Image 1 (cartoon, rainbow, N blue to C red):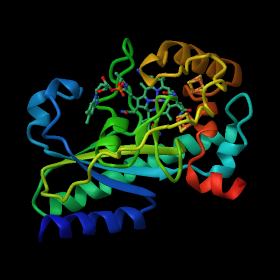
Image 2 (tube, rainbow, N blue to C red; image 1 turned 90 degrees about the vertical axis):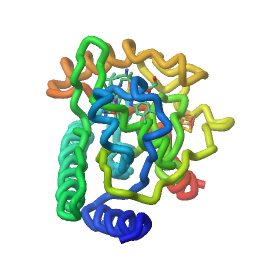
Image 3 (cartoon, protein in one colour; image 1 turned 60 degrees about the horizontal axis):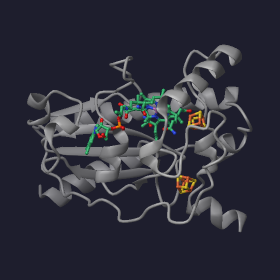
Length: 230
Ligand code: B12
Ligand code: SF4
Ligand code: SF4
C-alpha cells in the first residue's frame, strides 16, 4: 500500500472508533532531546499519529467556577477511549508488519517536573491539528481547546500533515478566567505550577482522585460553537 493508502486506512478506522481529529506528524526534523522519550526509541519511529476527541460541549458548558462530577467522569472515560483507539491502531499497524507504540493519554512519568512520555500537544501541532494557545493548550480551529489527545508512534510509512500557520489572533477569551491566574498574554509565560496548585485544591475540596479543572478549556470555544452562539 502507498503512504496515502496507509494513512487513509488508519484515519477511517480511527474515526469509526470515535476519534474526532486525526493527523500525522513527521518527527524526523525535531531534535531528539526536545522530545522526552529516550532518543534510541524515537530514532525507530519517524511518525507520530495524533488523535483527538472532541469533548462534549454540553458537559464543558456545565463548568462554572470549578470542575463538575460530570466533567470528571467524562475526562476519565475519554482517556480510556483514546488509550483504546491507540491500542487498536497499534494492533492494525503490527498486522501490516510494522511497529507502533501507543503513548498513554494522561500518564505522568516525572512528577517533579510534571512530564509525560512526550507532549501530545506538540505532536498534534506538528500534525496540523491546531496551535498552542495562550491557555497553553492545543487549540483546534473547529473545537477550540475542547479536545483531548493521544499519540501513536510508528515506523509505518504514512503521508504527513504540516503544522498550522494559525494562532489566537486577537482572541483573549481565556486570559482572565483562570482562578489561579496562570494564563498570561504570551503562552511562554503560562505558569504551570500555579495551575497545578489550583488543580490539587479542587481535587482535595471536591474529592476527585485526579487533578482536573477545565475552566480554560470551556473558555476556548472554537469555530463550531462561535457560529452557534452568533
Ligand atoms: C503533566 C500534565 C499537566 C500538568 C502541567 C504540566 C506542564 N508542565 O505544563 C498539570 C497537572 C498542571 C496539567 C494541567 C492541565 N492539563 Co495536562 N497534561 C499533562 C501531561 C500528562 C504531560 C504534559 C507534559 O509532559 N508536560 C511537560 C512539558 C515540559 O511539556 P510541554 O511544554 O508540552 O513540551 C515541551 C517539551 O517537552 C518538548 N516536547 C515534548 N514532546 C514533544 C514532542 C514534539 C513533537 C516536540 C516538537 C516537542 C516536544 O517541547 C515543549 C517545549 O519545550 C499531558 C499528556 C501528555 N503526555 O502530553 C496532559 C495534557 C497536556 N493536559 C491536558 C489538559 C486538558 C489539562 C487541564 C485542562 C486539566 C483538565 N483535564 O481539566 C489542565 C490545563 C492546564 C493548561 N492550561 O495548560 C491535555 C491537553 C489537551 C489540549 N487540548 O491541549 C493533555 C494533552 C492530556 C490529553 N491526553 O489530552 N497537565
Ligand atoms: S486548568 Fe484551571 S487552573 Fe489550570 S490554567 Fe486552566 S483555568 Fe487555570
Ligand atoms: S480562548 Fe482565545 S486566546 Fe485563549 S487559547 Fe483559545 S483562541 Fe487563544
